[in-house]
Image (tube, rainbow over all chains, first blue to last red; front, side):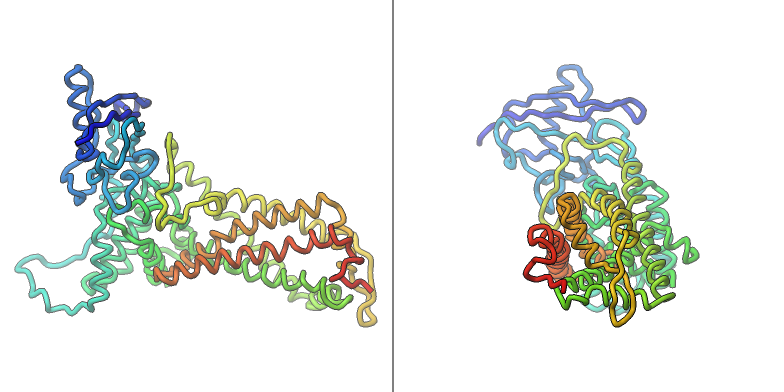
Length: 248
Length: 234
């Protein structure tokens, strides 16, 4: 097992109001088998031992499912690997002596809470605006009662895999949330269960996205490149279609 | 339900309008280039074309006003997107780079606002030079008409115009390199396969259009105008 020395430049910010700055840290004996977050755990252990404030970062599952760990690593959301969340990134990606710059996702709609942790409740409000279907709860209906063609089901599932990490917003030069909103819309709008509220949903979610202060989409497709689950920008095209259908 | 006006002011509506107006502008420049190439045709071809356009009378004004409207909408939305982007990310990254792969980020896409503003300023100068410039009259089919051809040939003897136009046309190519594909995407092209094909077609079309446009000033400058092999003035 080879051990590396890693230099870190980490964004430190006490709270939303205070101005932040980069702090330099040096970590010796980083194992190539560590995940990126485990490397940060080691950094925090060292900081705590030294009586310093540990670096706050979001995580939950550490297996690429929850989408909490969105951070910008050397200028790329979730780091250099495609279809990989920051928690699934391993230190073997880096070499001995590398310097890694870690920043929070930067967007007016994602205010910084502390260090690398940002408030992503703007996404929750986009969902609240229409990212659901209204059904009477109770006994679950028979699953095969509503026929769904295989291709539709496949597409809807691809869009449904969005974990809401906000990597798309972090990477977009315009800080647009079009991929997130597009994925949620394309998921629900393509299934039969989503039809009754389709038009209302398309308009409400698009309006909420703008209200939250996300920028415009300029079709850079950088969002697709950083998305840990590889959501296609075809979802954005679908959103535009659905929005226009809702208007006319 | 928002009204149509409100809908086209939303983020999605604005993007669709950008794509739509962009498309129309591409159609316009294709016709424009076809008109320009008349300089290599019959000695009277370019001035006959100009006479034909002027003979359209009120229709020409409808086209001019329509074109101006399309251009203004396209530029206005483009600039507002650029301004909005600064609001949406007040603090920039210390380090930022593209992840490559499916990303369409590059010199062309990142410089849309710059190339767009250059084109906007260029169009004002361009109209001033060629539409409002001093022109002699020539007789075409027994009727007096503007001698656009001589104006074009005289103008591009000047290296500032010849090379200035060349640079702007390269920037036009850069704008279209991302723009043509982006317009399709804005007008909700979904298929991934088609998207890749259209990106390639868009880049090729952008190069062809830019080269088509910049060939004329350079040819006139280096070829000596009416003495040039391909241009017949008599």
